[in-house]
Length: 375
Image 1 (cartoon, rainbow, N blue to C red):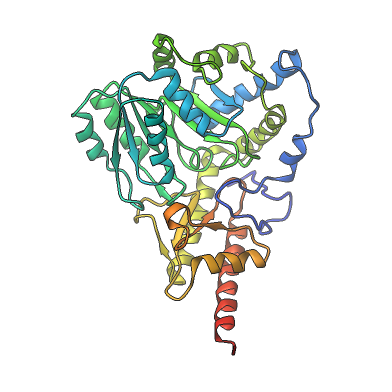
Image 2: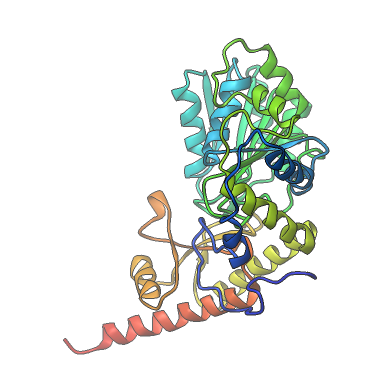
C-alpha cells in the first residue's frame, strides 16, 4: 500500500464513516474551485481528455469510461432506456438491487425478479436456472449491496449469464469500483456504474460508468432512447472529448485530481487497503459481540452492516457516537432500527477505522453507565 496519503500527514484522524457520501480529502475539495469555462472550449476538452485517459484504468477496461451529471441511479435508467426492449431479469438481495428491479417495472419493461434473503449473496446456480426459463435482454445485479454489506460474486454471475444467454450484464458497482476488484473487460460486463460519493471519494453529484460495445450495438438498434440518458449520444460526444449536455464542471475538476491520487496509490493497492479495513472491522466485531449481517465469505470490503450485542440498541449507539462528533451510518431500510453500518471506503485509512471502533467501545460504556445511573 505505497504512495497512499489519506489526510495529508494526519493518519488516524478521519471521523467520517457514513456509507456514502464519504470523507473527501482537502486537495479534492480545493479542486472544486476551478474556473468556469465553456464545455465546448479547448480547455474543457483538455480536462475531459485527461479524465478519459485515466478513468478506464479504474474500471479495468480498454474501452471508454464516461461521466453523467446524475446520481448513479441515472445510469440504471440510462442502461435500461437506451438499450433494452425485451425482458429483464433483476437479481435482488437488498434495498438497492430490488429498487433497480422496481425501476425496470416502472419503465414498463417485462421484469422477473430472482431474490435472495437479505444478508445472503445471489446464487449463480439459481441465476443459471432462471435463465433457462426465458430469453432475457438484460440482467441487473448489484455487486456490493450497500444496504446489507453483502458482496455478490459478480464474476461468477456474469460468467453464468454470458455462458447461458445473450443478455446484457448490467452491474451496479456503486460501493465496489475503486474499493474492491472489479474487472469490466475480463468479467464480460456490459454496463458498470458507480457514483462519485462512494469509493471514488468525491462529493456527490456525478455518475461514472463504463459500457461495452455490445451495449452500444443494442442501443443503436433501439428506436426510442430518450435524450438526456442516451448512451449513444454520450459515447459519440466522448469521442470528441465532450459531453452532450452541460456537465458538472466543478466535480470534473475534482475527479481529475482524485484520479491522480487513485492511480498513484495503485488500484490493486487500493483493493488491498479496503480489504484490510474490512478485516479490521470483522475482527473487532468478533471480539466485541457484534454480528456481521453479511453471510460469512460474502462481506463487502467497503461497507459493513452489524447487529450490536444483546442489550445495545443500534439507534441509541449511533446517537451516542454522533454526540461524540463521529459521523456514523445507521442501518438501512428495514434494518434501520437493528443494525449499524460502517462505511470504510474511499480515502479512509486503517488507523482511522481503528479509532472509530474504539469510539464504539467508549460509546457502549457511556450507554451502560447512563443506564445504571439512579433516576
